[in-house]
Each structure stands twice: as C-alpha cells, then as structure tokens.
Amino acid sequence: MKTHLNTLFVTTEDSHLAKEGEAVVVRRGGQTLLRVPIHMLESIVCFGHVGLSPYLMAHCARNRVSISYHQPNGRFLATVRGSTSGNVLLRKDQFRASEDPGRCLALSEIFVRAKIHNSRVVVARAVRDHGDADGELARCVAYLSGCLKRASRVAEIGRLRGIEGEAAKRYFAVFGSLLRNPEPGISMNGRSRRPPRDPVNALLSFSYALLASDCRSACESVGLDPQVGFLHTDRPGRAGLALDLMEELRPVIADRVALSLINRQQVGSRDFTVEDAGAVRLKDDSRKKVLEQYQTRKQETITHPFLGEKVSLGFVPLLQARLLARTLRGDLDAYPAFLWR
Image (cartoon, rainbow, N blue to C red; front, top):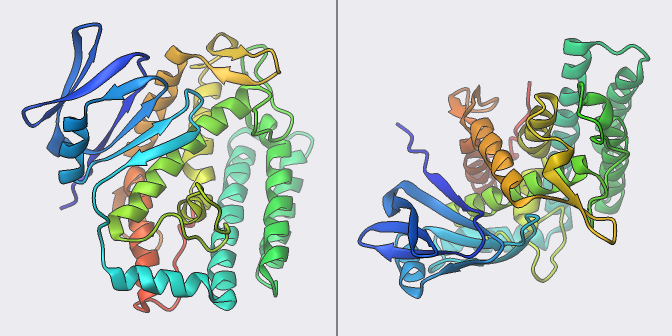
C-alpha cells in the first residue's frame, strides 16, 4: 500500500496561513478559506505575497512538511524545512560521486538520454495521433534519435551538455506545431525563459517551477542533498540534483500539462499579461487552472518501466529519487531512468 501525500498550493495574494490544532488554516481578511489536517500534507507551496505564522512553520518542521516560496511567475525563492533527514552515509556517497568526473559523466549521460528519449516520445505521439503533413515532426524525431546515439559516446560532460542543448533547441522549435487549434495569440517560436516572451513559454516556465519543487521535495525525502547535482554544476541557490532529476520528467509531466491546457482551450490569451519589458506572465487567477491540471496529471496511473508496478505520475519523482539513492549506495549498477513509452 502506498500513501500519496498532497501539496497545498496557495496562490491567493495577501492570504495568511496559521496553525489551528492539528490543521493548517488559510485565511484572508478575517475569512477562513481552507482548513487541511497536517497529516494529509507533504508540502506547502506559496506564490506571491503569502504569510505564515511561526507556530505553523514549527508545526510543519516537526511533521516534515516542507514550505517553499515562489514568485507569482513560479520562480523559486526559498524553502523552510526542519532538520535534515536521511542517512548521512548516503549524503557522503552523493558528495563523493559529485567530485568524481567519471561518475558525474555516467549519471549525467543517463539523465540527458532519458530527457531526449521522452522528448522524442512526445513528438512521436503527436505524429501518431494527428499526422504530420509536411514531415517536420518526423524530421525532429529522427534528429532526436541521432542525439540519443551521440549522447552515449561522449568522453566529457561539456560535450554532453552541448548535445542536450541541441536536442532541446530542435524539440522546442517544433513544440508550437504540437498545439492543436490554439486560441488566437497563443503561439511559440522557440524557448525563451528569462523572461518568457510568449504565453506558451510562460506556461512552460510555471509548470517547470512546480515540477522542480516536487523533485526538490523528493530528494529531501530520501535523504539526498538537492543542491549537489551531477549534470548541473554547483551554484549558490540552485538545487542542482533536483534539476538533474527533473530533466527526464519535463516532457512527461510539465510539457504534457502545457499542451493539454492549450489544446483543450482551457487557457487562452485572456490568461496572460504582457509587461512593459515584453515579459509574458500568467494572471493570478489563471495560475489556478495550471495547478489543477498539474495535479490531475500527477494522478494519472502508469506502469513504472523499471519497477513494473502501477503508480501515479505524482509518485514518480520520489521513486526516481529512491532509485538514485540506491545507485549512489551501490545497490544498483546504474541508475534506471524513467523512460516513457
């Protein structure tokens, strides 16, 4: 039996969270908006101007419920958590592996190949389901297949990152062609991140922020240090391992969320604002649509390719973190990435 705990997303500006008995209470202007028992939560994710009482922070720390703060556009700011969990020996194994160029390259190759594989599946499914009149998508599938082969023969990590970048550029070059009957004004011309320059990029950036938060929590849950990665080099404030872990899951979870919202016309031009500098942002109310679709996607059941068990997609980051921990401890010969089918 598996227990899938929940994430409480708080997007209401000027709301305040407090402890009331064994529950988390969300209030705004003296009105109670929501009450959730603490034992039902794994994490609390706050967007924008949201306050928390110190008593609630302490209560969450005791119950191992992480709290993270994000800008309204989803960009991570900070996290609050209790004492570090997990086996110190595991973290030492992680640190030693991160200092070993050979192990870094081996793990990074697996992360990159899995990301390219899953990106190729997204495009191939579009060809299968909707056709490919001009062959653009088929050419992208072939190009990604070539990147997969090249990624398995690299001798240094810089070249591997280059291949990953080439694959991502080609993938996002055709991502706009995966949109089916979008509303006017919804289009994409390549990937733009800081800031996003169109609604699709704004949607992707927000979805990636949600996935990164889940992967960070997964690393912490199994005792890994989310800051110390292998593909993503150490940088103050960057959760390198969480970013490593989410690479293979971007196409499967976050990209599919964005495509579903647009293709079902659940979001349109009305859900975005354009700032003076050209940055495109999701409106406050529209973020709730993304959160709902993200949670719905996480509840979908799949068969895990390595374990052979039926699990929800929302459980996959934690399973992958556990498999990575077993690999670092030496229980597995190689990390079994999540390969979508």
